[in-house]
Length: 36
Image (tube, rainbow, N blue to C red; front, top):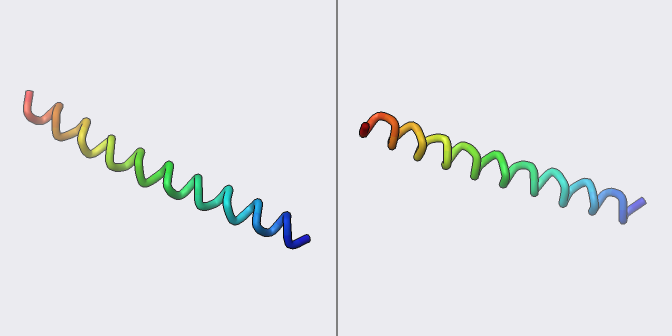
């Protein structure tokens, strides 16, 4: 039971960090598009 909890916790953390990276890259992409 505890193992499952830790696993799901890790999974949610990975998803959150991925979303954060996506937002950052999207911002950068938008900035580059605006520059052109």
